[in-house]
Length: 425
Image (cartoon, rainbow, N blue to C red):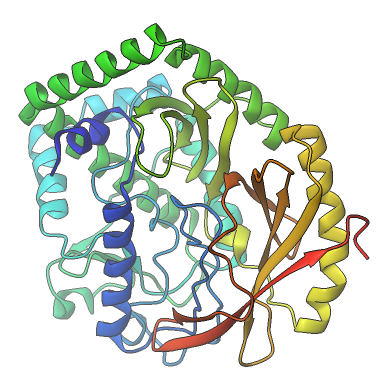
């Protein structure tokens, strides 16, 4: 693991492309091994951190009991990864006190649980119901306010042992085995508590074991920031303030209840230097990301991710999608005018057409200017703004065929990329 990744394990959410691929690969492996994955066609598109964790096309799962569907849903944690989640400043004093008072033996148990993990993200034996998703968010808030479970999640070392529980965590498979009935509030709190305690134990251990490497990488990053500022670029604090304002302007959110993190990305072949400013809440699984140009402070990208339920909207037929395209174009144009503030003279739409006649659950709108600049505005068909990104449209091709993993096999989808009139007709 590279030194900057060690630092990020302690200081905030940051996943490299390799880490993101590993997470998705781990989910795929879990699906393949169980052989009972539900139909979940994963689209490309909204948010690289998110990597469309919630854009799974769900069919009805077969079989009953957790042993018959170990692969059902890793979406809640797919954006987290193994060593990319902080548990620090955003937790209140009651939660912090609970974590700091954990006995050393309990911490070691959580560390060992993570070391035994064979895949890149936790799995669930079934997806949360809509009611459970809603209660999870409510209980996550209560947990942060000091409502804790009475017991711990039972941990099983093998499937035979797990069969004796109605609800438990199967350590070798890194899977929460959920009952067929609705989870109780106590069980949801136990899941939250397990995840928070495990990540706390892990990050504390990492901070201790790799302190010198983390400090060295932080010093290297600070030197790069200083050089950028000397050359006329903006400071990291200026980027944070820009991100804070964009959080309010774009998503109508404040930073209350979130941990702030920021880091500097040096220039690469396909992009200039930028700051990634993000606000995260690991308990409620809500994350907001902003990439700010390190030279002049303009917005390169804004995205968010908060739980799997947000993107689990019904897939539209092609006919239904055509009706939505006009309505969402109007909303995307308002975002360009009010949130981005960049002029344009052409508009394009991009979405996927599957062989079963559906159009997935999202659409990307590309606004291009005379100077060849382009911004992508992404929406679910249900109208949720997912991402704003300065981008390049030169690689997009109408009619290009893509193969997308659905948890059991690959679905074929054809890209639709066409120009729209400015008035949406």
